[in-house]
Length: 266
Image (tube, rainbow, N blue to C red; front, side, top):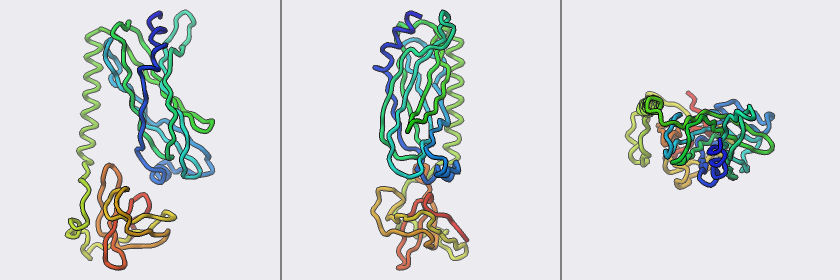
């Protein structure tokens, strides 16, 4: 316990959480059927520490995904916290040893958070809990997972084997959903989806949607479209996990619109 409390004092100095957007507000709103009347919403969807057993001196990684949603799609300040906990046999309860906090201003939507957790080389064998918490506008969600520090070779080997199998499953899923690289408009003209044998339309569902030269949010803006406007669908593509629709404009030119801002109809 003496080591555990000592580690807790320096935990914040060596453990930092980093997060980034995973899915935009509009996509998450549809995915979880979020309604503005629900107010602010904070929900941790997944949390893991990999591997679950580690030797002194190693660095397991914390991986989390979570939602932050608001009635209006505007930037909000959130606090991401990683907490180190242990069961104190003298106090007969779990106690907080230390924590690391980061305040960030983000767009509502789904985010992914990661962090390396350095284990001191002189760490003593023990079972800990790593908690992850997200606070926003007076509301929060928190989950925790176990972490074992040990020198037992059998336990470490099993943890590594479980992590390898987990990685293999993720790699297989990613391969099954492999996405092509962004394409220039000229290369999409020959797509068989342009054939009149299978004509579909794209209807704008967002209040205003940006139409761009390429399937990239930073690509040059071609035009803006309002809710209810319809265009002929030429093809679709998935880039970085985000789906885009290529549409034909009135003047015959092509442009790309994010699939999260429209729907495909017959």
